[in-house]
Image (cartoon, rainbow, N blue to C red; front, side, top):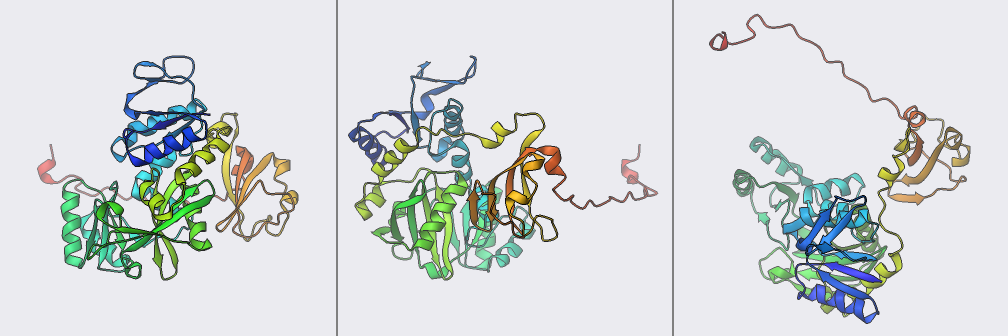
Length: 399
């Protein structure tokens, strides 16, 4: 295959390893500076230019998008997607993972265990928010910090309040997160490729430092994580829309707690710690998947007039509970079930024999009018119109 690595750091360890691994496997590989692309929307089809010239054909692209160029970098990746070029990490996945609040919201929606987190703007809400996550000490995070930068441990309520107030005064958005004491300044980085963890390491902070990032002097060691950690890491990466990701987890008393999903994980630390060819595993995965470029399913399935995608929740009082999918009557109503979600379990392309249970969520495609009739109406609150006061405007404002 012909592979493009999008990177502004061609001499970095990760970029060089990926380039070497691709070349050793007989692939044609180029490292292209993300900022030298031009997005060309002037013709009949989406196109890209590089250094002012039409870009030659590529089979796959591997984004290594830095935090400082997220907006432009994801625009370039999105254009590759529009051109049906395969990428293991989509523009949407990179954008989701780069914003800590958005990532936390998405993972929370799917029941992924994380340290208790809250986000507020008003000063009056800060102390109640800290108390909701368990009180001080508390971790304060900038939404777009990387490599441990912008992560602060506040030992007391007053210190936390002062830090948050200072950061917000400089227009910084921050997350407030429970400090997981039992992790003892350690975390696990699992490198996910596709649907498996190919390597994992434990990172330990040095001295009084609570951040275990290698860039902050943390030490690393190979670790064989149990299946529960592997399952959580893979699921978190897939939910974010990433096929190559570094998933950082804390070792909580009740199991793994996901801290962050990194769309451009560094390879130097984990390859040194594990002595595994992680770069080669990434290239092999891309080679096996290159025939399946990203497709925006909702966008593609919504172009037919009157048809669309919707989620139908099976409730206890519904006629669907206890019935096999084949006897639910959905197909007769021109509704196709794409996936069946049962808790954290996802059943793709469910068979007619699958018996529906209370709480099942069916991702469906079909006639919108038919599906609308199966979605219960949300209760609406009637707004009460009050009488106009005798003096609707203060005397000073009259005239």
